[in-house]
Image (cartoon, rainbow, N blue to C red; front, side, top):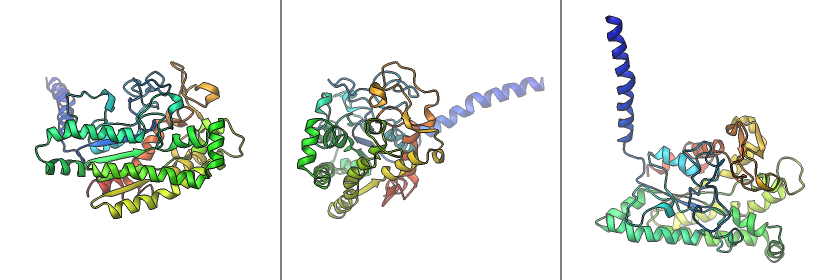
Amino acid sequence: MKQSWAAVFFFILLHFFPMKIISSNQQQQPLAPALYVFGDSLFDSGNNNDLLTIAKANYLPYGLNFIKASGRFTNGKTIPDFIAEFLGLPYAPPYRKSKPDSVVLTGLNYASGACGILPETGLKSGGCLRLSKQVELFEETLKWQLQTYYKTSQELSYYLSKSLFLITIGSNDYISNYLDDTLIGKIIRKRISPDQFAQLLIDRLSDQLKRLYDLGGRKMVFFELGPIGCIPSITRKQKHSGKCVENTNQVISFFNNKLPGMLRNLTSTLQGSNFVLGHANWLGYDAVINPFKYGLMDSSNPCCIAWFNGTSGCVPFSIPCTSPDEHYFWDGYHLTQTMYSTLASRCINDSTVCMPFTLNQLIQM
């Protein structure tokens, strides 16, 4: 009889105590009221699914380690997903999946695969939401949803000032524009130096960040461009020694080197703003060169079977590698959720990755 009562008591502990823990976690106050996401395929959570574009990821094996093939260009979660978990927020749903008559107070994702800072970037892939369009859509969200929900402008301003704005964009302006191996790309490179092109991107990007500030954004995190010269789409097309095409990385560095000064200038001139730079380049490069240091076995090849000798997206419904968590690259362009987890967690806590503040510090401001 004693053993029977012990079994019943153990059953109660197993089935009811964990439920109380989960309920308690769900009731905890999030660290920020909302997460708003802007950018390209590195952050896209499904906005391209219904667009007329070849840049889609709404089929397996994309989403293999996620709930489903949602439109995320990886096997699982992205950086915004991991940051949402840290903040205690739901994953920011894609803007194009949101209902016009409903108000989403925890944030939205406006990022769109293949797009860039420049309006012409991504056109050869079909339709996409360029950065200026993404900011425009956020303005519509503000006007038609948030302004109707909050009773006063003071309440809305406070909500926006405490929300987190996450941005990464610019890779496609190089991959599909300046570094494109077509005739158009060659003409652009002859007319514009790498430094001039980088400055053009910086100026256009600065304009859009100012627009977000004017719309109420105060806490903004921008992730710089990763080591594009190391992605399979580049390394498998160009001759190189070592693991990366260093000439390509050098071209990208002109843009990344201009980012800190631009963000510092915005912080100093836009009252109440805090712009944080996520140093994805050196961390990503270090993981390519020293994969074992990050628990990786392969930092050169895509995990999925990708089109055109591993230089593009995953072949639909193909069988990927058996250990995606040990791979750096998921397809010819994008990373696995393992690498996205590393980048996100380091930005949250490591002041050498996200500066001048970590995310932990930023949300307390």
